[in-house]
Image (tube, rainbow, N blue to C red):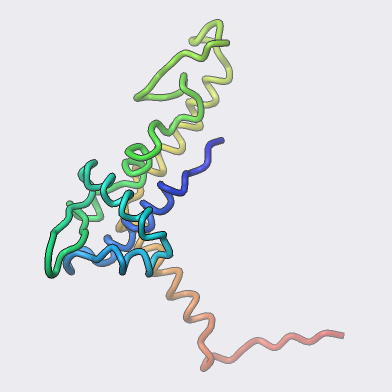
Length: 163
């Protein structure tokens, strides 16, 4: 199976940061790079790509920077991955948008591998196309809350005895 490229991973991290700050004004590249631990030059390239694909917009000058071009609840993870990586399918003949017959395939209609990979592609697409930037940010915020509560020094700690 393919893994997400660094470009896609960094793109998602930058988009999550912009989603958390949605409607609070543009964010500077330097601030985003520092907060998200993304190399600045790479982030510049990523933001230009995301801008050309319509996911972010930029403002020059004082108070400038980058912001999401639409609400984070309207941008799905599937959309972002497709924009950067291309089709979600693990093999070309399983793709919805970029179907291409495999050279070694004798019959696309009866290929067992294609059938299974279509199911894989559909399951992946089902999750990614239903998950928005705002949903991910909400899940992360809940996880951070639970983590903070678990580390609260005022709560009694469970003792562990070893013999």
